[in-house]
Image 1 (cartoon, rainbow, N blue to C red):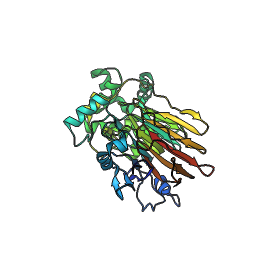
Image 2: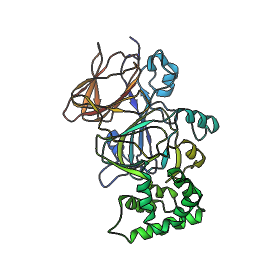
Image 3: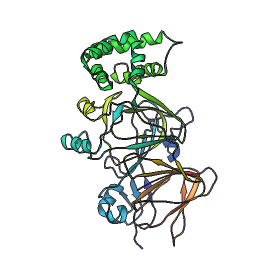
Image 4: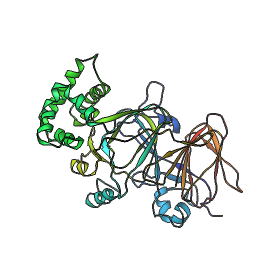
Length: 392
């Protein structure tokens, strides 16, 4: 039997971005708690489980003691990815845990991803699109997709401080969301900064008459007082996900994760076009070219129950399968016969394959199911066990 016709333990890459969750009293950040590690006073933002060269997971076992999943895919493509597969791992699974808002951003579609990587490979490090789905683990807040234009206009017209932006938009730009964004960034920097500060003070005087968007604007201007991204609180829809609810995000949809912990599954890309709430590079030229400025048709998903304890969530514009497994015993489906990754979020279980002893799986452990492993099963051993399964 091949060394890759078996489950292989994975060690994910942890990212300590500044917006990540931090310790609160005795409560460790979610990712540190999941992995049973000392938080060391750091923000714990993301756990990557995939082969993206920016942060590849490490494979423990097999012919080599420890090796990057990206290198393993290059050395043994048929065994890991499948005989007829493309020469790259087909998805990226993450845990995302934000204590502060992320940047206002969108991701390119296939055509723009190829162009961006060709034109600026330093900023856009791969040629892949980035459709993604986030499934809430805790209560999760996010901005995503433009609101209807009458709703935006009703909010902005009530705030006197926004008159420079409002007047410029009505005079010089198209009367839609694209034009409104263009007018915001066309304001002289000092005028825009003064406007944001004045608007914040004006809204603070309306303690009994604040919309949810105005409340969020105050939070964002407090965290980033000189950042135009705060104004997107009025432009984008706010979503409040309960655990188990999902927000599918196709390419080109403008969004910002605000607070909470979730499971993200996406195409294998790290291409991000940022326009606000960030200290990183802002790329307005490609924002105008790549973002979808139409009123959003996004909807939350509760997934599809395939069987008791098995919930499947769509990842838009992709063949990626994302499932949450609660208790019970589950065959690990791979519709295209490609690889899969399982992450145990809670409880205790075991991984089974024909003709071999079961492998114990503890909470926080992650496992690669190579394409060469024809059949695999996950079995929960205690009540309350919960696992994530991603495959293709």
